[in-house]
Image (cartoon, rainbow, N blue to C red; front, side, top):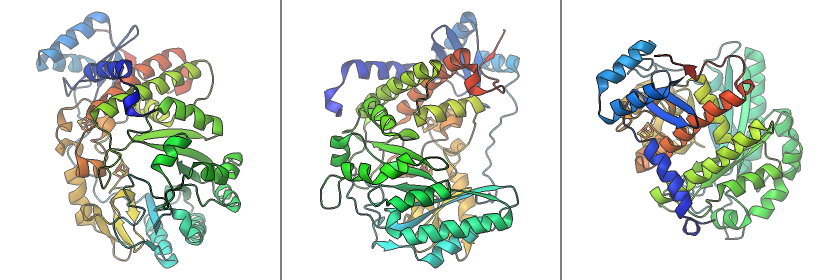
Length: 464
Ligand code: SF4
Ligand code: SF4
């Protein structure tokens, strides 16, 4: 389904969500979901259920910018102070995850590739083994017994450099055993070079394998052809079949980058679940080197409508006791339930960094070769001055208009790479999705409290 094929109802549902999730107050957000009346308090991302009267009073307080009434409500709840996210950046956070760009080259010619066919705008290259091993040693340098680290392999197409992946994995496992730590492994691959024996290796080391697939055959082949232009979909399905059949310790997920030409998310989700993926997730394409494939506001409205369709199916299936592995929804339910409140969208530049084929450290895999995310190198270690200033600048309290947005501690201010390169074109989409998820959370908490376990504390009931 391309953007031009649907408008009308889809855009209407998205427009309602955009309207209902407008950033009217930095201190509260209101959600009317079925018979539930919810208040999200961003400080601590706490969710309260209130009666109709209280809901109405808070609604008029936010519409009339009556900060005093909102403040009194928060004081009554006892959640006005302390502010759980302060202005400070984490000081010299320990490294807990590294992604190695083991091959800065690729055999596909994806139309929107942020890594510009893997080379990141430079000469194609592969990571030497010595560089990979040194990067692993850096990852283990600050670990203590009982801690966990993650090693990820990305590219370009990482399987071009299979030997280095294997050696770095085995070296990491040795280092973990020696230091009595736990290491987990992940790889993001286009799937075209997977060999039968890879499934043994990934299974043995419990890899989280992510396959980049952009929809059914027609959409995928348009977006992710081989470098010569030939479609890659059927070839990939043939290659990854042994992986899909062999998931015990290994988990194989699909990741869909959403562009204007593959907006049939609901169809794609069902197709991929049927193929046997452990889970399926969607990410909007917001920033590509050439601008190709980027979503505009109209496309984001259509994407939101599709995400809601997938989310509603998730709820129905879940209530019926069926598994429906829609990653975005699973993650949102987990974060809302935990009361996640964070000053960043991710661990980039803090506990997580990327390593280029030549051993330079960057804030994450997308900042490889990008001066704006430089973080030192594996020889001299993390550039702590650079890291401190980056984390200080990137704190959500320093971002506009995030400082006054109710979603700031769930969203964290948006992907740094996209924000630096394109700004924040997706805020309505992000808030609309979170608004829907808050309502879904209330419904699932009521109908399937077992889903969240016995530690469920939200939504709490507020009695005025
Ligand atoms: S990036 Fe996130 S926190 Fe910032 S304004 Fe947009 S939705 Fe709100
Ligand atoms: S900065 Fe963006 S691409 Fe990098 S880890 Fe964070 S969310 Fe992902």
